[in-house]
Length: 211
Ligand SMILES: [Zn+2]
Image (cartoon, rainbow, N blue to C red; front, side):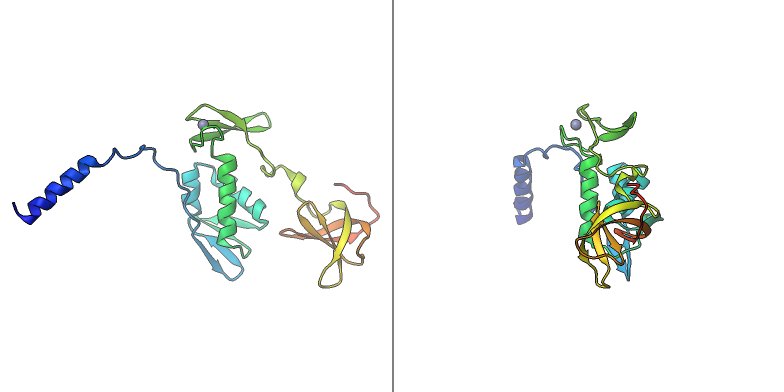
């Protein structure tokens, strides 16, 4: 017996002792975001690879990301171009939130699900265990404007701070609202004149709030 024979014999015996390959579920792994930053632009290079794994509509995932990250952006080829500087970790985090909310079955933890509409309710139906649950949507569809401000909205805002340029600022939903000519502690009606990501610029007004 040569040393090689010994070696192969050993290998055969070792193989016999190996347990059967553990459950052969193809493991569900969402790819890590592959992000490059170019100045104030952030590019997710493998966006469509991610949506392929999630088996969700590209645009649905995109709109969720844009809303959650508070940035404009669009799909270009297989990439997403975000028009803000955003950290890869923040993007990964939102992809995870999307996955937990819109993909993973809360009963069995499997990703073999599909989204259905039941009237106005979005339902996550699991093809593995048959469970159905309404998607717990805080900010989902584009038509849901309750969580976003638009130019022309009149809001009542409490000025609780003063910005760098001396303008009063307050919070409305998850927006920072900047209202020139106001002082800390004031409660004013303000009309939105411009919105940039999650900062809304507004002017004092006598109009009644529309929101
Ligand atoms: Zn399930």
